[in-house]
Amino acid sequence: MQPRAGDVLRVTKAASVQFLEPMLFRVIRVHDWPTYDGWAWLDGYQLNAAGDAVERRSIFVQLKGLEPGNATPAGGLRSRAGVS
Image 1 (tube, one colour):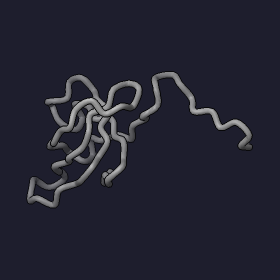
Image 2: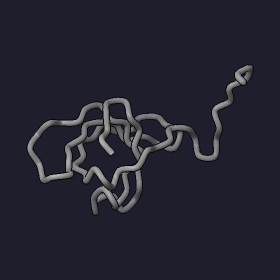
Image 3: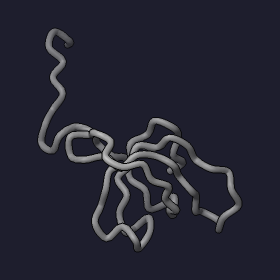
Image 4: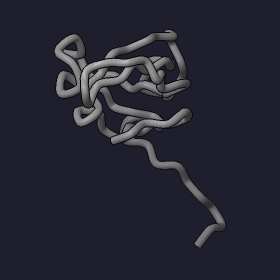
């Protein structure tokens, strides 16, 4: 997965051993700094279960370990009344 600004990611220990507790992360920027192949520095916000930003962070992750995230409350569905 190649993240872009605005993406919400689920970051787990598959991305880096420092993330034993999974977190949601909204990407602000993907740095073009030289790193190991398949790794990247990301700037963004750690999100709570409601999708609200709770802390700004810079993280170093293995790209193949990133997963798409869901910024809606757990178990919640966004209703789209009137949309078929």
